[in-house]
Image 1 (tube, each protein chain N blue to C red):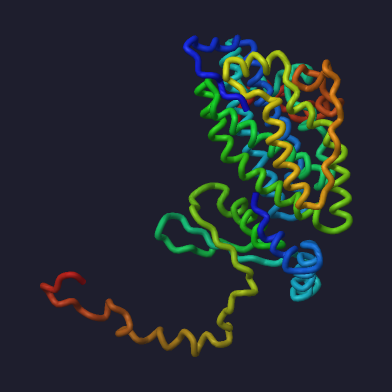
Image 2: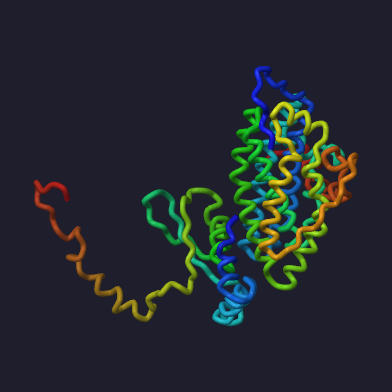
Length: 127
Length: 267
């Protein structure tokens, strides 16, 4: 029975697990502009050994164990998943839409940045 | 649990009638509890939990289908799982009373689920060693699902018990109400004795200490008080012999209405 998260929270704080949980929930609710939702988590699923974990979506949960269980139920219930990651949405640092010009445009008009730009001489092996 | 003693004399298989009874018990527990859980569909406290409860309900329904199909085959009267699910009366159902109680509030649903899930894991684990190969295979498949169910309900017991004052009060109240229905889970009758003697089913009484220690472990961590056992009368009647609470009839009325109004309908 997995309860490590709840126990860690209880151990790390003089208050009960619930105190910690509601503090987290409260802080999150504030950052969501008074919305009383639980914290948001991003879910990544892996479909086969060696394949990358890909973003599947997001969900709400009070802690990591619950996020993992919810991810299992929401994103893995119809099979095709062998591994799950859950990450607090707040832990993601994203590029700003306003910066997309300096960030991404320079790569758009330089064909020589792509391998296809270069012709492979006949007879070259192992490319 | 008592493993079937290795002996030179082959253990006699149980009478089909006894095996039929036993398979109905396994199937009906899951059918009725699955139906109770499905009542949360669209009413869960949050979307994710709504889906989680529906998932567990579907697992239980799937297991019920398999157990009842096997029951119909053993009976040999041409009844399939649908005939057993939709065309038996309340007195013919063999589920324990624990699973038929109304869903109550979320704490009640979780507490009942937790008590059953632990029982389910302990029972299915024992059934994987059944001398009936088909039953052992079904148990092995169902056990994987049950292990997840208990992880889910166990985690909720910790959160509710060690949560707010209100969640603690609600889940403790639920436990206190539910506890007297747990005795039936381990009360063996003639059918259980016959099945245990042939190694098809485990000795129920021997499963109880295992169940109790797993339950207590979580309740302690959840800061909940384990209620005292309510002594059971030796001849107490229960769901296994068709004696049900008033709630089962209402549940069946809803569950069976479509199948009975349109017999043989398909879509």
